[in-house]
Amino acid sequence: MAALDLFGRRWVLRIVWELRDGPLGFRPLQQRCDGMSSSVLQQRLTELQESLLVERDEAGAYRLTRLGVEARDELRGLTRWSERWATALEQDTAAEGGES
Image (tube, rainbow, N blue to C red; front, top):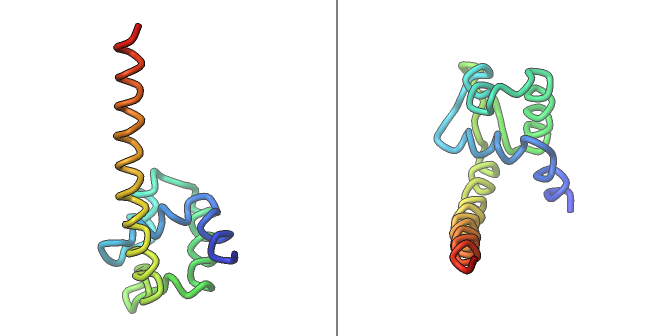
């Protein structure tokens, strides 16, 4: 349940997702996260570092650890499912609109 508690915190999934392609510095990561406050980003990054999902590289950028990469890979399945879900919702909405 600890993983669900962590991933259920606001912005955690977004941070992991934004780090999916490689390391990012604090400011670029903040910009990719729609400019979330620096205090919240710092708090979430600290939590992710303590959870061994994120680390800082020698240049000071944040990157996923091996465990973080595994989490990212698992999230891709959720992303595929969410795309199917969005399509189903769109089709249902279109069908309801056509019945009027």
